[in-house]
Length: 162
Image 1 (cartoon, one colour):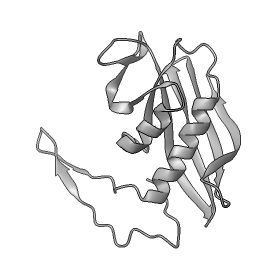
Image 2: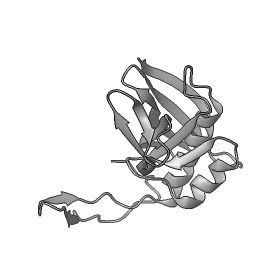
Image 3: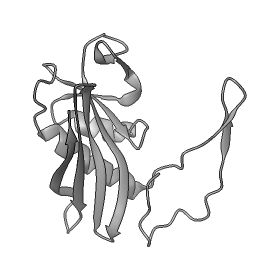
């Protein structure tokens, strides 16, 4: 779960539950704030500009922002950068093939922003990375800042790689 900016709290969030097909209750994730969406988009922009060695070519990217599909407007803006970008829900992961498009069957790369931690009003630490297969993935810590311009990644630190 993400931590929110102290000046922009979500308020008192209650544990809301949704019923699954088996009747069991599971907690709903809170809706992302506009700031969280903007920071996530900045990290995706950075990730899309970094080459992923041995990625399927042409690369198809499947984006996940804190375990869910990014907003359609974010996907549309990122698609203008050139790569083939889809929501995370459009792919599936298999042990044999790695990331596979549910519609076309083409292999791809998952880019994710898993967690956001607010450092102060204009800086966020984001944890994310990429996944192609169980033998080709990496995790990073991104420093994201906002200073008169849109949010942007100012540093990336490798946490692990396989």
